[in-house]
Image (cartoon, rainbow, N blue to C red; front, side, top):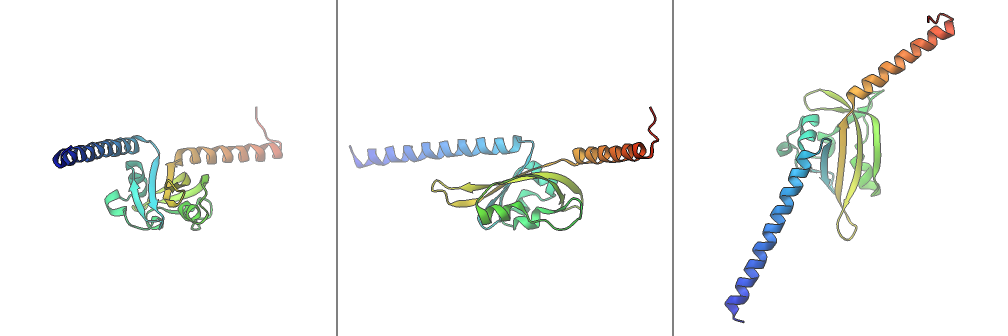
Length: 170
């Protein structure tokens, strides 16, 4: 085997590996853009590395402007009942290394001032050795469901008040 043949074989192997990597990256991009929930990923320093279009729409931040920013700057949440600031789940996952399950008691304050009631969860992103590399945050707008629950609760309260007063009409 000549040196030139070895070099050519190595160059072909590198090109094939690059082609497989490009295909894999394209599949990932298509998958992220196809998911109906908002997805936001961070590095281990809680800086945004990736957002899908749903996350861009809900936060009001284009990915190009959000990447590299602290997640708490882009994903600002408050308690849905009190309006008090709530810790971004990414901070908890970074501190503990554990998944934070869905919560639906928070309101997302979008960059443009719109408020969305959301449910969210966060999970660690680990490398092959188990070291924390970042966090993936998945959230979705549940504003309509939240309004329906509030209307149902108000209706139930009204019915109970009438029933307690003995004024239930059939």
